[in-house]
Image (tube, rainbow, N blue to C red):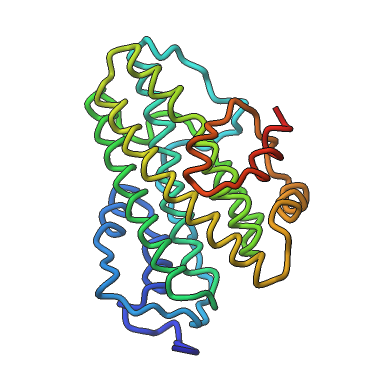
Length: 271
């Protein structure tokens, strides 16, 4: 389908993704995203969709501050554990935005591309709901702790370049979650938070799939553009100021997510 106007019916996937992205309340956004049924949507691959104000929709809280202004709290205290769960919930709230943004912003990709990212958005929405719900059992609500905006800042930097977006958001920032998940899970286990650890187990399983989707479409675009994927990644990371990755790396999870041995060898050189 080509040249679908922005006044398309609301069952056009990319237009609907943009509308959902503008919802300010993350709880309402998560519900709305989980209600998006791929079987009932038309994938408007080549539609021209104009940007609109309010992308992404955000709540008034949490207060967004530079990472250096965030306090480190001992996970053994209730406040410290809640702060950790809040930070994870904030990552998932941003991940919903990132998946919706890649759907509406970048036209001209195959149908499967948009369906893949819809599934990512739906799973990120579930992750947010699980973490926000667990946070509430600790006596806190999402928004009560400050947070940073690093994930969305990279989305802004790469808003005009899909190859860079795929290289530096799912394959870099979100892939870092593969490395961090088990140590965080073990911290929660150490303070008796089995429910939180179980949520982390589910998230790790799903995030391997999300990073795999990023890897697949990054390599697809590299092949289409005649680019070598390892050197191209290094070039993009430097151009867009991607954070320098630090070990230890969860190599098993990264392999499961589709990183090949050449990429892992390049990654391990930065340790």
